[in-house]
Length: 472
Image (cartoon, rainbow, N blue to C red; front, top):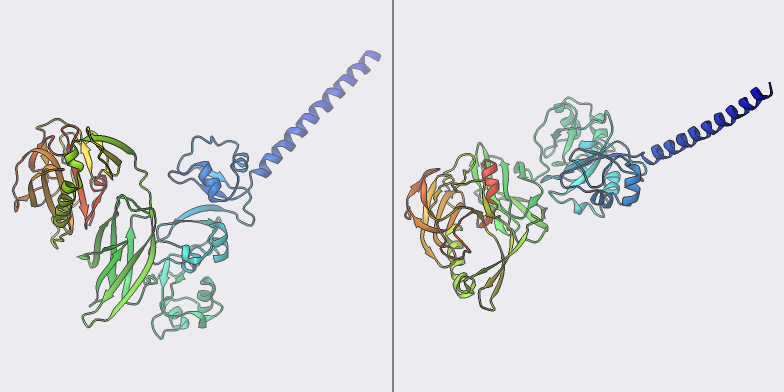
């Protein structure tokens, strides 16, 4: 009996020890779960944990503690990250890119998230910070209703009359749009409706039916497409950054293409649109748009001093700018461009690369950027026209060597430098894929290669974009 009592005592001690360990594990687990509470952020392309922590004003340590299963060195687009410390914020934190014509008021009405919460969550100091192209965080709850149907009261039209046309109770209409009553609506104000009767309201002056710019955000070297739909009788014009937009008709819209310079400092710049009547009547709208860095690399190359001497380079640059600054109203291309090179996937230098040019055996140093795309390949390889167009230059230059420029219409040009042979003449019309010359090593080069660049309304842009997508 005595030995049995001793045995039971040992069992009791082991039982209580095991129970203590279980309780510790439970408390620890509850602590981790408590730390892991908070809204969920969906990882975007290019995000890092440090960036996410800074964006939400939380420490990296707290972020890691709230997400113990996440590898800080590996984040995948679409991955879920819990954001701790955001008092009063729940749900999924979605990323919203601000479009032309958007405002905090319209964003709040569409998403049904209060302006105060949007300002707090995105740490906005002023509504004027709502630049086109910036990314805002919008908390979305499960089952939360968002509205996509836009409408706007016309001149002299009351919210009651607009609601009747939309088939919605006017007080419901006012509540959805955070209006104290039907009397608060004013002409041109964007309102949202659950009925689905989208009248394409834009928040722009009455002459504009709609307007947009893409892609957003704008990046150094990008090609931007500005679309405007105006009322009958109006013509569209505008300015993006410091370039006058040239509009052309496409399927009832007016469309302009504009390049963003690779050396334009990241920041905010004006986009101004104007609609004009023949009698001089005008309506305009302006909003700041965000330009972001292209994150281009840097390199140093050594070249013949004469090819970086300003007395040679400046007149040549002015000549090329004068040629590519002209706008032909006829559009020759259709769809994507094709590669001008025999080896379309082999490159020696990319667009936008920041360059330091040093003159061999001299004290000359020049800074700039690579204005096009360099394809690998030896002298004598064929060069193909990437799209239809008319030859507007063909001849020798100091920097660009034997060169050809093709006008594709609408202010879009292709340039081909450093050729050994030119097979076309000024005035020739070339078809896509036609052989226009041979690769060489003339002009400012370190070896034979094909340099291809694309100009859009007076600015060199990233040629890759024109190989990847079809512009209107």
